Amino acid sequence: MDWLSPENVVAVLTAALGLLATLGAIWYERRVPRRKRIGYRVQMDTAIGDNVRTGGANARLGLFDETPEMSDATLVLLRVENDGSQSISDADYTGRALHGLTAVFTGRTVRGLAVTAQAGADHLMEHFTPAAGLRYDGSTVYIPRVPLNRGQHYKLLVLLTGGAVGCEVTVSGGIQAGEVQPNRSTTPDDKPPLFSRPAKVLTALLTASVVTLAAMILLSGEDDPTPIECATGQLTVVGSTAFRPVAEELKEKYEDDCPGADISVNAHGSTAGIRELEAEGARSAKSAKKSPPLIALSDGPKSDGYPRLVEHRVAVSAYALVVNDGVRLRNLSLKDVRRLYRGEIRNWEQLGGPDQEVVLVSRGSSSGTRDTLQRRLLGGDFEIKASSNDCVRKDDARAPVIRCELDSTEQVIDAVGRIPGALGYSELRAATSLKGLHRLSLDGIQASTDDLARSDGYPYREIEYAYTYGQPPADSLASSFLAYARGSGQDVIRTHGHLPCATPEGLRACAELPDEKPGSDSAR
Image (cartoon, rainbow, N blue to C red; front, side, top):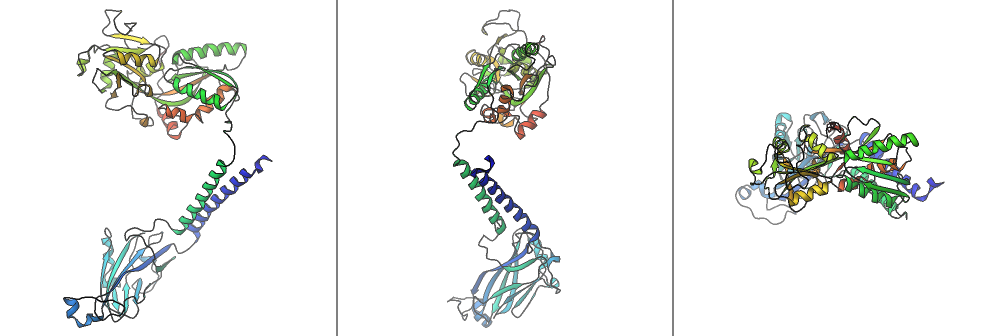
């Protein structure tokens, strides 16, 4: 049986190991006791007298030299901390005595005591009072029931006499569901251990699982398995010229991955593509009674006049206003954009720019990019009537400004880059790093593919739709190509500066972007 192949067996066993490691960690956290823990360690044990065994030679001045009792004195700095995984309250100390812990300095007598708390934990000092049980007697220091959050600590500086440096120091006491033990941590004072022992074990097990799976994939010996979306036959993609670069690269990659598929991209504008799909679908419905092998890409939603077309949301696309480099402006308000396209501003000097006449380089009525401009930036208004065929001289002397219409995004960019005073619009990536023109910010917001997921971000953006006539069969090339775009083709869409709707952030953005329907075809 195929599923009993060595690769599958290794994959199942590796997955099971990872699952067991996770369950084991959960069980450990819930069932294993002693999760509350107080640790202690001696950070300093040094001689300050000249008659201390194993203390080493030392020189003394002042009180250390003048007080006979200090001849065999030692200083010990004892650190006590919560190095467990849970906080400790005063009620967690289980002894019946007033104090919570005892520190015994074997063979030495306690002569003095000072307590310090870490920075930011000054409130701990409220617990170190005789009334709370702080005292010393003989070789023992009695420590109050001090509540400690995870990682908190305090230190005891103890003055001792009568014993050698290095004599045993022990701290004891009862902790509910926990313990007190020596702390062998080597981390800096104010940092608790980064990983607990269970975390280290779990990390090692999961790392081993991932490495095993990666090695299995690399050594499997399979060369570029065919994607499960593959289908054969012929398909034509029409519509948006702004999205054409994406469609062409998707076509090439799909045909490489799926032998037997023949896809052609013939983009002449969003509206033109919608009309072609409607006409071809109607003919196919009469003759073959099935959806034609045709997909129409559209910058924005279709109008309500095409009820048989089924939408598939592909990506969120950003567009940009572009202006000739002779116009030094870098930002326009939406109010001024609307005045420009109404013909109210005839010279860039009116907006603080150079003394150059405004030239509007636009797209034809079938353009989805133009339609998006009218809906997203012009508030539903239309551009003024075209007045020039060559974008250089007026054919209508009564027109307030020169305005021409071109057939593609590439033509618009070329014209704006060479005509002084020209203003146009294009898909965002197409307007990047080109000579002779630059992009404009809108109301101070720079066009950016990074902000496409924000519902309140850059205004000149739109959903890229793919339309089919009815729902194509699941085994058709049209369905397969759309599935490929939503799956393996996401990287292609991202590379061209669009946000795929199939990603989590893209799904939200495609759902939240206002779905403003365009006007009728006759109005355009």
